[in-house]
Image (cartoon, rainbow, N blue to C red; front, side):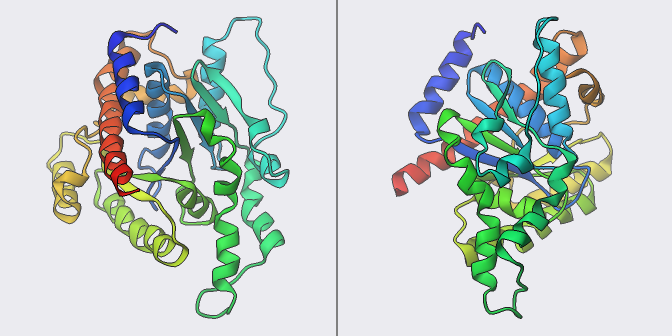
Length: 307
């Protein structure tokens, strides 16, 4: 991969500020907010810029895995053969995620998921039991064990990358708590509809806040990202509501518009070979990646001085 001078500069300046690998999850308690689309494209753009990126599919639906496999196939030679021997649940049971890492394209790897990962909560219960807050005296101990599994297993993997991006199902559950607890930063994504914006508030108050206050989780919200913006007045009003609730400075500058072309990605894989794919890549997702990098540098610059 030949990198442009601009991308070389972006990576060089980023690494001068950010001195550690970072884990990021995209979150909302509601479904249909574009979390998987953001993970797909953000990882792809960052890799093409020259960053080392790992995508972790922590969703039993494994839609991100399917897209990554299509992308690998699209960019591979016709006679290349690859086999996935193990996926997320096997790696967690064996306490080794590094063995699962699958190269997709240069700078972009994936830890794949499968439908059997739906048994992750059952596996946690088998290992650590279950406890209810306010009823069981050992709730804090049990829950701390349950939520820290993914974080502990990613620690040996993280140093190989600039970014580890985690995709999760649209629920507040063991999947999302593990992802949030493992993350240095969270992108709060919402579709420009009222229910979706409510999902941001619910996730912050019911998932992130308890993790920080009760379990000393070190994650931070790096920004609120409106997604699938249409031209209607209702969409614009929802964005204005988000600005009023969270502050203009906490919203990403590059609001993602409704882009019909991204609907073909799950069938073809990530590429920029057609006019419309290239247009979406350059006009929507490259600006998102630059906005993301800028926000991370601001947070990490502040955190670096605090450390």
